[in-house]
Image (tube, rainbow, N blue to C red; front, side):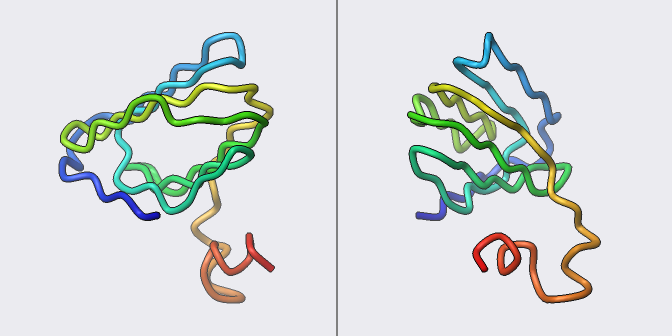
Length: 95
């Protein structure tokens, strides 16, 4: 389910607490999510969060804030240059 955030002028900040929770500001859109992976579009590009038991505990669409809890294994930014060769980033992720 796509969620679009209205305010895109918010700074992008990532706060990770003991790999058990993460708060992200500057989120423009949540592309997809489940209990193992969150795919976000932020002010600075795509972001992929992987883990287990992941659950969105707060979503503020006006400010662009997202809070996620669970066991977080990795947080990575997606390379925007990847879409020029074989389509979009999302096509590469879901091959």
